[in-house]
Length: 305
Image 1 (cartoon, helix red, strand yellow):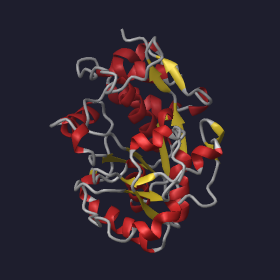
Image 2 (cartoon, helix red, strand yellow; image 1 turned 60 degrees about the vertical axis):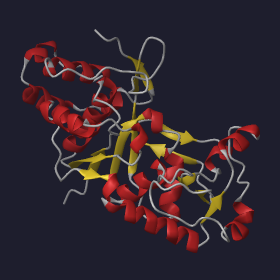
Image 3 (cartoon, helix red, strand yellow; image 1 turned 120 degrees about the horizontal axis):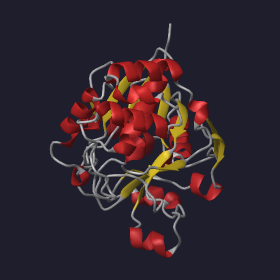
Image 4 (tube, helix red, strand yellow; image 1 turned 120 degrees about the vertical axis):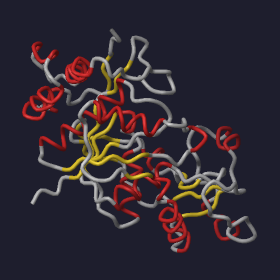
């Protein structure tokens, strides 16, 4: 029985662009070439960054490009009670604590948080606003105690990755002062709950992987295998992203865009497939999937034609 379970987890902060098409295609191909399942999860727990209608637009784009998911789409906004339960569990077990430090205070001491409030956790637990509801502001954030953290991991595309101990030992935020659950908590909880076996995603998340592995370890949950795809960057070296105003992919030239994405991933698709149906192109890509072609590359320049 094949237990491969992959996923694509976009945030609904804008349309699907070339960079996110590459991430979706890479994770889909890795799942399908291993006869696995491919899930889609919408990371919709940061309302200030969300664009109305973007989630539906992303799903329609995936469907048009033939990247079909195998189970119902999940939404992180439906899992808030689960995140709260984990927060309360970690606080009760003294594996997390409340922190009153502001961003300004942390910046004055350097880029990395110095775990200032960790030893004050007993006092901080008394008399503070204990509201744990999502989106309701608090006078503190919740941080995870990083005791005996991992400082390295093996990535199936990037090889052995070593992270600076100062970064890996930082007590990172699980819940923000503005009352929103942090991405780091939500992604680990959801990957564990959905029994995700393989996380194939962009290399912009490479460094945060060790933090996620540490949270898996603290929660006593099985961590997935990670593989990080090269990022699509422009001629200035900037990631193609919604924040950098990358334009949404067109639905007018689907096979051409898929061919370009496969070429970006160094898969060398035959030129004649540029004008074939998307189904024929995707079937070729599944049979010919060679992640070793881009192994070791964290970014590749993409020229927008």
